[in-house]
Length: 130
Image (cartoon, rainbow, N blue to C red; front, side):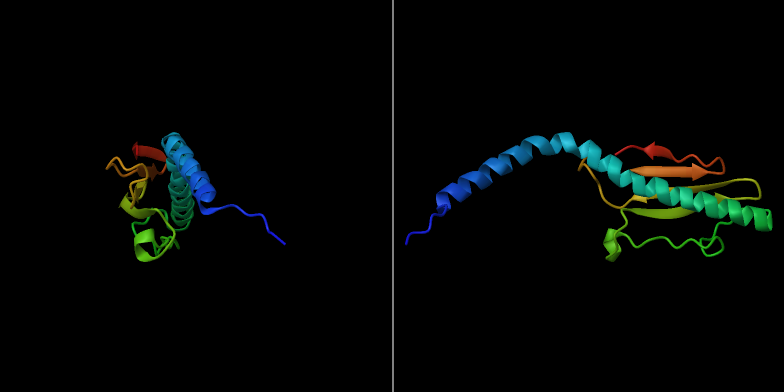
């Protein structure tokens, strides 16, 4: 009894065609990938904003220390984690604060790292677009 199957050449031709289609589609998908990964920064910065607001209601000032606002920055991909951004509080006074998220990887390979900031107004702003 003979079993029908694909030979090696047929499988290789299909793989080459899939590879060519991926190469054609990938440049069009890079902005979407960048945008999806920047959602992480916006969500984490919003969490920092909420934590800062709570700290200000309790102590009448913003904090420059993540420990005081009960925020633990996630481990980045460079530290065997899953986060694509590092987080820091740039400044904090009684009436204002500024926090920044900086990408640790270049999403589209152009050499520019994505940077987002948030302040006491609560709207994340993209400072450097990747």
